[in-house]
Image 1 (spheres, helix red, strand yellow):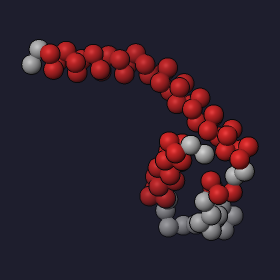
Image 2 (image 1 turned 90 degrees about the vertical axis):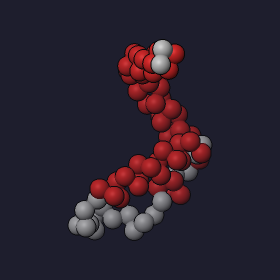
Image 3 (image 1 turned 60 degrees about the horizontal axis):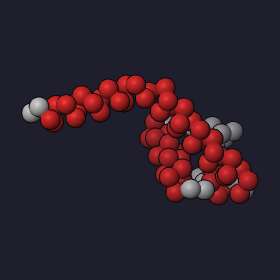
Image 4 (image 1 turned 30 degrees about the horizontal axis):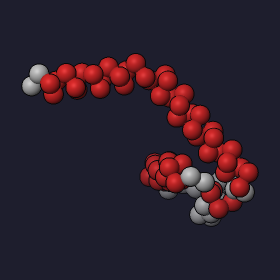
Length: 80
C-alpha cells in the first residue's frame, strides 16, 4: 500500500480509537489486528485506487472553495 494511503488509514484509525467509548462489543472486536496486515496485495491496490478516487472527488467538489481561499490569502499577502 502506498505510504500516503497508509498514513490516511492510520489517521482514520487513530481518530476512531480516540472517539471510541470504553464499551466494546465482542462482535466488533478485532483484537488489535491491523487492517492493512490482513489485506492481500490485490485488495491493497484496489483500496489505494479507491482512496485516490475519493480524494479526487472531494477535491473536485471543493475546488471552487479551495481556490477562492487560496486567492484571498494571496491577495491579502500582496496588498498587506
